[in-house]
Length: 281
Ligand code: WA2
Image (tube, rainbow, N blue to C red):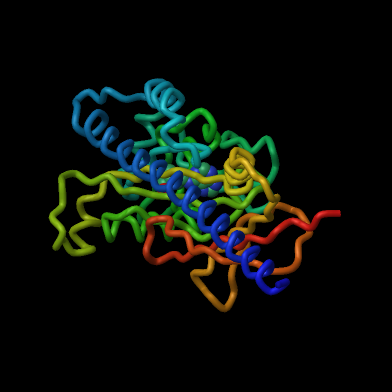
């Protein structure tokens, strides 16, 4: 029966789609756990030692040698919480000024260089990047609170003590959509019943990772052996009335499609993978 064939085809597609979604979710989860461990590393060896045992060179070496632990992250960095009253001393200590994130159009140019950025205007507080993986060196000295998505993510992560994920947005020095994952570093371990105010008070800094969605999902999709070619799309459906497309295999496809949900570890965000069979010519 033809109906049988169609039913089996759709069942097969649903299985393949679930398998892909699970694979991406698992890779994201292991990457996220390692970013969390990096936050503990900074807490232990930067804030927990005097003098600090971490400088930019150590951070660069360590993060380069452990990239295999974070298959979905294009770069990690650490930004410090700096109050306005501490700004002058901070800038003297580091020998550079806290910079404001470039305008939207400037952030897209390929030779985005913090040297060309303007100093940050006066704010209550800042989150300048002091350590970065070599791949995102261009954000050193940039105030991550001067970008809306990064700022909201920092505020959400530090009030809750949990990993926070942004919606998709254009990353600096990249033409791609990406998401940023942030973990807050605190002065001491906070018990589960700690209030948001106490969390904010105990904050020292923010360990963040960027996930360049198209290049990293392309790599994952390519790695998977395929008998039937399938076309994959990834959506942020947090606002279900206006989903944001994060990834598209760039192939025209129509016909039956299956949907698998993906959990990227931040309960305030919802994601879906949509799969179709590629049309044979
Ligand atoms: N990292 C890399 N590229 C970006 C970016 C970012 N944020 N934001 C825009 N383009 C240091 O949450 C703290 C990393 C932000 C962490």
